[in-house]
Length: 435
Ligand code: V47
Image (tube, rainbow, N blue to C red):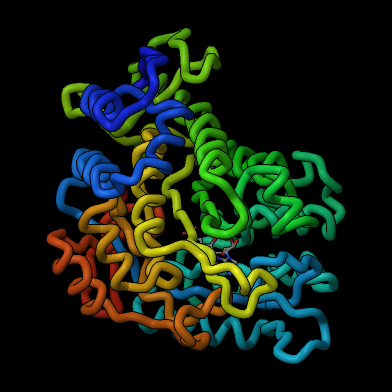
């Protein structure tokens, strides 16, 4: 619902934040910072759980997917990253199209609905490699949704394809060509933390937040849905995490206002938050706020939007920041809970089990506001938690057990959050986004 926020200026407390959550009032920057600093993590989690229940009841989502890392060769050297290799270095790889075709056939045979494809910024692969890769997967597995390329890769492709060096026109053109080749949506990677100080300390050389957001804006305008991550637990502060959330929330407002206007639930000129005079969209309020649909669906809006936010806990092992500890279990719970509370306009919060671990993801579902845990994954090369290798697979029965033990009902979804109906490896999806 588009609403006029009552911008409460009083010092935040758990009681004042609870009152806002109960009335559907948007939380502001100070509230976010308070939630990151209060020692009462369990109250923060309880509020996030209340919001999750309003949105999703007792459902928790997963998918049958495969991750594909096509190359780990990267022109960048981000200090948090243990994935990248330089060309010729031990362990450096790039996968050829035959290999990728085989992976697509295997994914389809296993009944996967999604292939999640990311790699490094390869200095020499031509743009054709990327469009050929999408087309090849499409040929082998036409039903697979291709969620591919972080915003950082898209900017790199705009450069190497000479569709444009830094401009949004080149980004749009590259996205159009990738969409023609089979791109279905963009994953949320590469966002890290939207702050110049953190950027310069932990991922200097990578695009800054404005370019990352340009890519997602262009994608949304082309009707491509996207996700958004935040890499936390390294050199960033709570204030910087909250700024990251606020920037993403504002961008989502701009997209969803179009949807809300189409639904006829607009209140023009509604003042926003933090002194910005723009309409805002709140999806997480009490049921009484939603006489019409609570969430946007693909039928009512032909733009894309952020479907899901994924806070990613920093995994120090083998990175240049290995001397840091990474976030604690409690900080993991708090971070997804604060994300759930601040992102009142993003439908889903994902506890990515590969990085969180399955036991931690389960607790996040049960009590910290997460409603999604990603999927079966199978191969994952970017992080390896607790000595795991690249083969990091879980099964549907394991995902069901994890979700049911958390007191929730497992729902298989496709990448666009439509319910999947399955008979073994054969599946169909509903035509409309789950409400
Ligand atoms: O962009 C890299 C992160 C991201 C480390 O959209 C690390 O559904 C922790 O974005 N410790 C890629 N994180 C993964 C990603 C993702 C994952 C799951 C689902 C979705 C989605 C997106 O992984 C990178 C970077 O932010 N990363 N190194 C590390 N040492």
